[in-house]
Image (cartoon, rainbow, N blue to C red; front, side, top):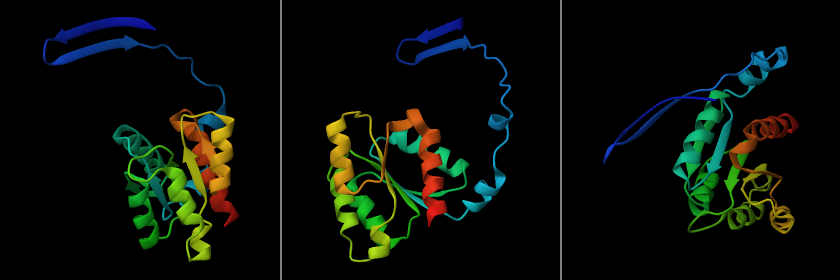
Length: 166
């Protein structure tokens, strides 16, 4: 990484400029995307339950880029309200949220009166790698855990896997 410039103004902020050299990938598979999977997803709905605005923006943009229609809830209670009103192919659930956390919201969803809706795949978004917490997530009915945005490709891959099983 090469540092190029720095501009800073009191009360305004700072601007950094860096040059990061990368080698061109030789893996053709990374360059080509499966357009049939993308076309398949253009009408599919995802519920994103996430209280952090930056994470909401990143995940929503990423999922929309893949063709998903995304509804966003800022806590578990909002997620449940959206879940009741709409049908989703997959739910991305933050675990630590205000008002109602992701485990509580998942427990509610899994006990929902509409059995088909109650089986909607849920992927937990969490930074907590603890095995005990993972056990709690599975007991609540969460299908898969992803450690936040570090594995965004895995989140999308698992979402596609869930959709293909339906």
